[in-house]
View (cartoon, rainbow, N blue to C red):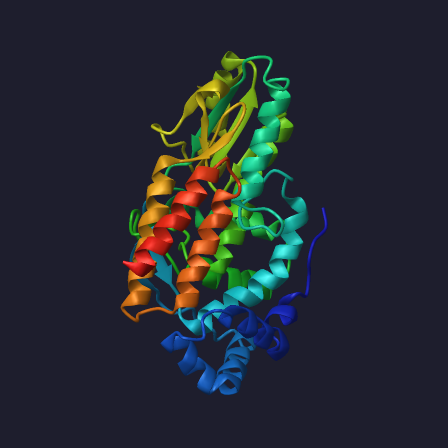
Length: 349
């Protein structure tokens, strides 16, 4: 295993901090806090550099708010200053940990994503069903309250297995300990904030241990994961059932996590596999009904916002094209036509 020393300067020098600022502010220029930071950006960046270099940097508090996407989530937003640090940390640590991840870990990785994950699951189903000539099944599991339940000591231990720079480990302590899940309280030392760029990397680092256990200890052939949702494909239903207990035991013993008891299911391929917004069937793929309804509702809201002057026509058009892109990954010709027809009707009514 390769160890990394003396990487702190690559995070905290002014040049990488300015690069982190440029990456962070893309698409965020209209936001008031970004505009305020931008007015004296050089002063802010050099002050941040001095605080990091002298170990005087303290991560600030979070601004919490709720979103529905599609289920309700509690987002915690850090200050612009702290988010620049997150981007700088990500740019250095992600290349260190990326080579350790399995190929079929799809969340928040370059060249991966939801559509690639659905494609990969579909290929696994084709192989295991021998091109739909035999029955196969999918075990799907969801980790219970994953982001709330991440153990700070376990995460720090995982990072320190590769990173041996004491200054970087100090900064990891500052970022990781800046948040404690309200579900468990500050003394529990648990939780990652949904909203930090670093949380995406930390989630993959944390669950890489599960990936390695399933692939190399349990020797599962057809396995993939997207954040805290994972799927295993097999023609043997009893084999899939036998995997649940060792996976639960590993999560509990090594990661201080548990499976969501109501989201452990073994489903026959012919019944349709509901995964990441799509339903995969032996001869076609469709959009999940809830996803379809949410798409139509949000596009209508965007058109109404445009007509009332809240957002531009380009913004509404971009939303339409984004949704058409989602539909292009399934057998949805009629649905695409319906979405276009409704869009033009809403614009002209």
